Length: 464
Image (cartoon, rainbow, N blue to C red; front, side, top):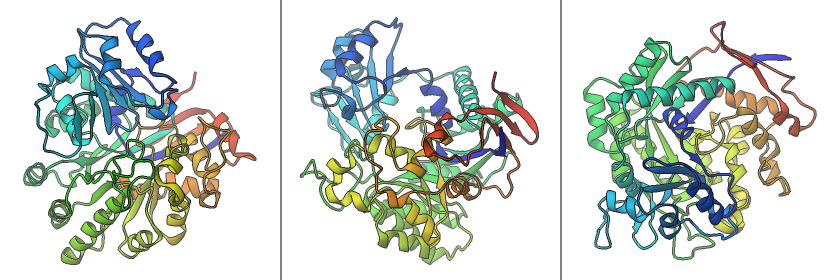
């Protein structure tokens, strides 16, 4: 057995993780027909929601569409969310519920294809807004489940994006999380990455005095913004067209002016920004918005960061170092992305996912999982960082092995570096694991069990 500090995850969706635990899990299916038959055979009383499909794993090599989902049910709404969370497919009944027909005109970011029922990016909110609102009891159930999952995986502190999981006011989320702490229903410390999609929402948040508000175990952290989509869904914004889609460069969720305006408003009030940016053009826009704001505010004690940064170039990494912009990364994304990077970006793949380069040049690199996008298990994340291999496709070669971390470097990124992203100065929570984490062969990491998790000396999880 081996005792060490517990893990800190610097970007996940705590409420979303608990919610998804109650949805139909789709990640293990390898064909569209399998999904249709399996979901049809389940007992459904109301809306049918699944998450985790990836067309790259299907023998059909295409996305789910409404024709597929109509076979599951023509009476109940069906929603099937891609693993990235940036694309989903719905059936005709769901389109009807969302009041989307063949004449519907959508002017926002993302797209709605009525013929296929495939919807992406911000347009997804039209579907989510048609869901029945969860009750307070539902929200508590999801938070309790997320707490259980984190403690079982040796995670005691997280930075979490929770405000856009459901179409309800952010103050309701704040209140129910605080109630959970008051009732001792959850113990994991949460720093909120406040996902406020519009300038007006951000201004309301600021005007009501929420900036950097500390409730104890729950605190308000940075503004969370999304500047583009996902690589798997071909919505990450690239400077050049996708290698396998020559007419497409992905999407920008905000124009530069819109992004700058929000970053600067937050910056003026001492609120950091953490920006989801995957494609190289999206990273350019995000970095420049932060830099232009810092030139005006002259803040030196900021914790601005780019989340994901998979396609960050050497020049962008250099700029991030110069302006003290951190990187919140997910090595475990290689688990899914390793088989699509070449098809999406061609030869550019050799200068992508340069996470160790970021660490070497001195960026504050924090490890996270973005769960429920990928598994929250820190040992699986460390395995990906050290081996640069995919668990799901072990036969594939390591991806750009020169970007591999040592185990000690990975632990540093998971614990010490992440303190900055949960707005904490000290960390004395501990875990007991089944064997020394300094394994002889990297594959042994995946055999380690979390035996016990302690927060401030109190046992909050024990493996039975």
